[in-house]
Length: 290
Image (cartoon, rainbow, N blue to C red; front, top):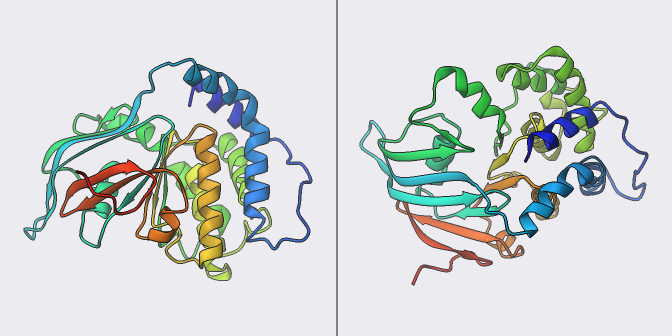
């Protein structure tokens, strides 16, 4: 997204949402209607210029690039074996593969939890091999991460969990005060800010995780098995929300093992096996490279 988009979204965060509730739906189901409606309302104008530029044929920049990446853990496990792939600005990509194929290692590399044994990793314009310490908070602000296990701090309220996430990347009090209510409204949890994680359902905790990922208006969202703890109906709602967020300009990478869910969406699917890309194409889980 452009800097103008980020500025407009930050300003929007302090505005009051419209009364667009859908009375016949429960809170879990209304995430699609409330969240997507509010995203459209506040981002339509600021993303228009970006959309026009893409339609006019401007070359999209690469948001994620892994080049000949090797990762060997201290115990001798070879998780990645020369993996290469690219994701362009505005793409929605599923990454799939069996257990042990390297999916989790890729995520850890992209968010800077681990370093490659060899090869190069680039995220949103930052080379993770050459990044300076002062640049790390800036890089992390460009990436929103959604984890399967939510990674919420049990003894902190929903609101305080989100404050913690924003402070970790250097956000100031004014920005925190605007963004947190905005993002909680976005996922239909505006009345849950003072609840502890243990007082929420699994679906609500995942929506907190999505709100947290959106806090810094990231260029890229990385979702690690975001529907792994949800039933099929809720899983579809979450995926449709991510799809709509992507349609408004955010690059989305979803790591999942849910074959049926992937096959419902006509998106690019990258399949890993034994630390390598064995399939990269549109629209179907399991289609191998020829």
